[in-house]
Length: 276
Image 1: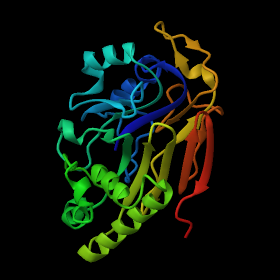
Image 2: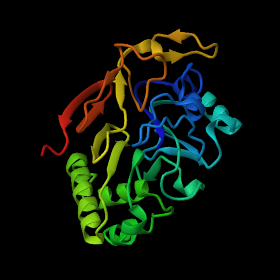
Image 3: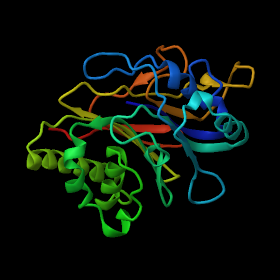
């Protein structure tokens, strides 16, 4: 299980969300408050790596990842202090599949696309070979790690993510179900993921056979902090998160279970995902 944020709006320094707020993503790497497993146990520590992906002057995003705990990495703080962006992702990892190594850290990148995920696919190790054989040959060359998350991303690209993100992700879910059936294993899946092409952000909140991971958004502007930790106004912006970066209140809107969202600028639409 992991924690992530996705920001869209007026350009801000990445630190204003990732490191400075009271319950920033870096704080969540050591003290998450809503990260529960299927048995209801709180997983407060997300120490198995981190990553930041941001869009700037070039079409493809910048990417910085490492397998160290986010709270202990001074390079992360320096990068977040210097880089300003109007669309960026950040993620702290608590591993479910795959060892602790840089290639298993999120976000994952392909050309101008970013993908990050909180959740997991039960028995992925049993299904991995079957699923990876579905990845398009040109995309398979980009498979560097061993996580279910990276396989999901490359399958989505194979199934048409660049043309229709919602349909591509729905095809991924159906393929995961089929793989579980083929391998005769119990299917438990949890998807709380965010995806971007540098223009829009899409998220999925969906699960089967266990409660979904948490997911929220807010257009309230004063969750952005300055270097002293003071909240400042940041209009025309939106943040999507695994859990709020300040005290939970009515300004944080929970994204419903089994939902697909699309965000452009600070405008968000929410649709049903796999309406069965």
